[in-house]
Figure 1 (cartoon, helix red, strand yellow):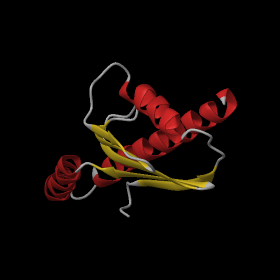
Figure 2 (figure 1 turned 180 degrees about the horizontal axis):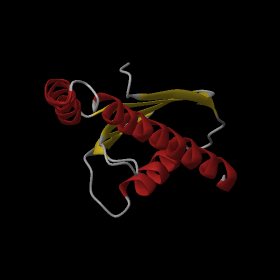
Figure 3 (figure 1 turned 60 degrees about the horizontal axis):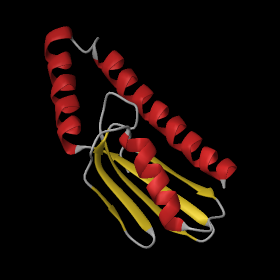
Figure 4 (figure 1 turned 30 degrees about the horizontal axis):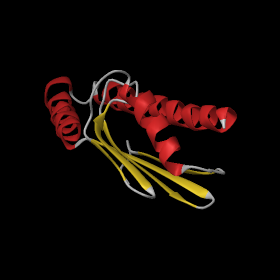
Length: 126
């Protein structure tokens, strides 16, 4: 797990896992088409922004009664952030490193809150 990756688990009762995965895919897609797979116990969505400026590779697995959510920052964004931090160290003597890291960390918090809210919304609907 990286510093900017989203990872949490939550106890939830699901009757139909496929319906839950379809609900999450619909809500996270927001009218766009993202490469995704829905297996028996897992949902995987590639390069999904999760209402943030950065894109995450999302993996959601259900192992009764726990739901595991793992969203890793896409490799292209990780490389871009690394290059930005190196350039910030070289050209600004490190003063711009803090705002860059703060921005990316804020995106992580925003994605975590959004995913937890979606799971809670489905729990209330069901």
